[in-house]
Length: 288
Image (cartoon, rainbow, N blue to C red; front, side):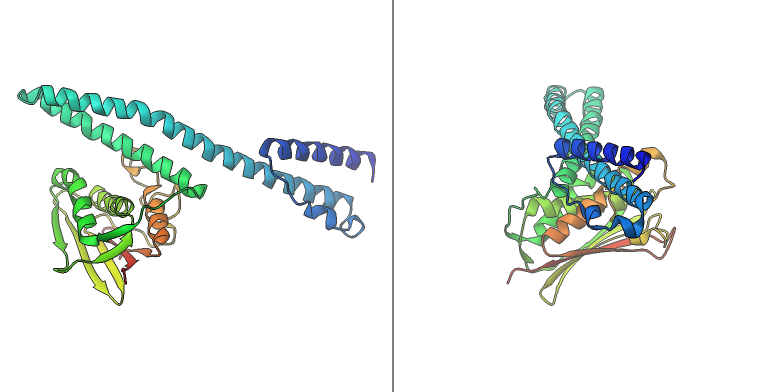
């Protein structure tokens, strides 16, 4: 090796040791198995540099996840206090029209912020494999009804027509009711958000071949064909042309997929194209 290559190799080794100490990780040195005589000193050095850059990116990504988790926890506590204060003020001003309306508006906005923070926390839990399900025997119809009630104000605000079709008999699952409610709240909130005033939403539930199927359909803006394969990617918005105020963080559908799959189910999205509405189908295993 010439002096320049020796110097570069020394710097790479130093950076590699720093990365190992910062991350607490032990990286397998695959580059050491490569014959320098075959690939040459220059190629070997480039390979080492590329490997080191990958390791640095892994650490940066891990730090980003840790930052999001800490940020979400730091935001959650003051938001909870604000929410409690708003509820107290609303209770005291229940007989006065203007403060009551202001209190209701503030409560809606704080609830939205709390939901965003909770979604960030869930992203962190899923990324680090810390999400735990509290399974119990539950009727899927109750979960769907609760989800509809949760987004009822959004549906009314958009003057949407909601169609529901639920089975007459219970649809028993062994699942986490809160997490499944989170799935359907996300899907219904998106359907309402991307459907123009006066549009139509539908929630259809039925059982088939040992599976429970829930379809959430809307007559909204639709989804472009090139976006469909990436619908459930983290930090990817379905409608990237939407104004920033409507675009969201791009984590809702990723959470939906992870929560459904953690229950042994699947979720798909479909649309005939822009302006043609969309439909999301959730399939879950029924309790034997």
